[in-house]
Structure formats: C-alpha cells, structure tokens
Image (cartoon, rainbow, N blue to C red):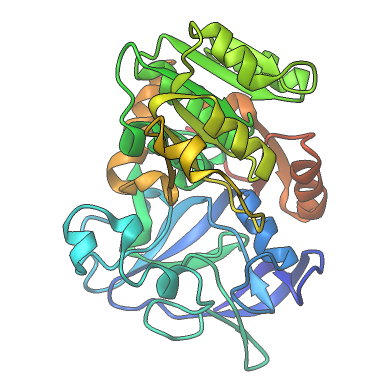
Length: 372
C-alpha cells in the first residue's frame, strides 16, 4: 500500500512530506490505522536532530489517533471502524511485562527504538530502501500498521483530533505521579517545567489530593495556565530562587515530590534541593545533559532519591482510559494545552514546540474528519 508521510532524510533535516511510501502489509496481530491526528512530542525532536537515533531516513511520530481500517486474522478485541489511540509496544510475555510493568519490557528499545517493526521487518520502504520507524507506530503518516498491543480502543464519541498526545506526553507526566511517585492526599509536589508533560504531572498532583501543587517555569503565560489547571502556587524562576521559595511555602521543609521535565542540569539540581527529607525527584526529560550532585549532601543525609521514569510507568490500556474519564469529569483538561496545525505545516508546528510558543502542537492529518 502506498501512503504519504513526513520523512526526515538525515540527522537534523526538516520534515519533508513524501508520497509513494510503501507500508508493510497487515500481519496476523496487526491493525491498519487511518490516521486522523498526531501530537508532536519533544522526543520526536530529539530523534530528528540526533540526540538519540533510530536511523535515517525516518518517519517519526508516536502520539497518534485514528480509525481501524483492517485487522489481522489473530487480532482480538478490535474491529474495523474502532477509534484508537496509539502508544508504545511491549511484548507482554517477558518477566517485567508479566509483572505489569510494560515500560520495562526487556526488549523495549528493540521494539520501539530500533527503526524496524517488532518482528524485524521494515515498517516502511521507498524504492526498495528502508525508512526507519518509531515506537512500532510512526504516526506522522496518512496510514500506518501497528500491532494490537500498540493500540487503545476509545469511544467513538471522543474527538480523535485531541487525544493522540495521551499516548505519550500526557500519560508520561500523569503516570509519573500516579504510578511511580504514588502521591497521596496531603502530600506536596513541585513540577519544574510546565510544558505538556509537566502540566500533566501537575494535574495528576491535583487529582491525587496534594495540598501544595507548585509549578516552576520562566514563561509567565505558562504559569498562568498552570494556575488555571489547579496549581496552588507558581514560581517564575527567572525572578526568584525556586528552592528558597519552595522551602518558604513548606515551612522550611521542602516538598515530598518533585518532577523535572526540563532536562536542564541546573534545574534538576534545584528539583533535588527542593525536596524534604525522604523526598523523591522524578527526572523524566529526554536530554543529553548530565547531572552532578553530592551523594552525601543531596541524597544520603536527607534520604532523598532521584528516579528515572519511562512513559510514566504506564500500562496504556489501563492508564489512557483513566485519563479520559478524568477529562470527561473536568479534572484533566489536557486539551487546553493544544493547538491544531495542518499536516503540511509540520515544520512550523515543530518550531513552535521548540520555541515554547505552543505547548502541544497537534497535526491534523485527516482534515475531513468530523467528531461525532
């Protein structure tokens, strides 16, 4: 099958919309998906510019939403016409998957970041040459083929244009708070960086009943949105010392939890220093930067911890429906962070994401789609 997709030909190149790309046929456990929309994530930019690589040329995108067009003969629980959100792939049979931690699937990198399908075949080709994929998905396409384990079925009544980013950014931020930190009513949390991931973490802190939910950023407009979404306090770290202010807001103790979404070494260090005794900092940014901290002063004496979190330790088929329920209750209004762009404007959308002009760009791949 021939499709259209946004291709990055070599490291650092812009996206180019190309026709006549060959899509892999539908395998026994596969779904063919007509793409409606896809979020743009900072992980896409990291792979585009070469901070990490799955190989080039590559079709990126991993926050897709669409409609099932075809199903393999061994597919269960999906039918033609189903509306789905796409997320990462895990095999479901390794020891970590069987423990309920698919984000720690023993072959996670092979399945999601090797540039080929989970079965080792090329996902896409042009003129007989491989085009690498991402997350066994590649959502910057008009049509893609994914394994059924990549997909989460949702109600037809939900607007597919809005929900693709639940497959990565929003589930990563919220899952970090719900699944990894396990924040409880009465806890305190500070989130450093109020992009899509940070705001999702912050809203999860509100839902969890944290009595202080502190948003830290340098962009006044984002801090205003954080207040609208439930932050009890905001700190512009250009104007005041965030560590000192957090200590002031917590009686000198610091917060129970911090989440860093910036990946900036100095900011992560602030996130560690803002912790109370026994507190934990979750570092969840995709970054090439390093962190230097004092094991004695920063960690041991106050029993603080720094943890890395992949995809919010989420089980997409469990966590994404939960987020949609919170959304429908008005408790997780993620769509306030989104701005729609036409597929052909992908480079402008990506530039607006990099500059911070847009928190969560969403590409409308099928402009004829109308929500029910």
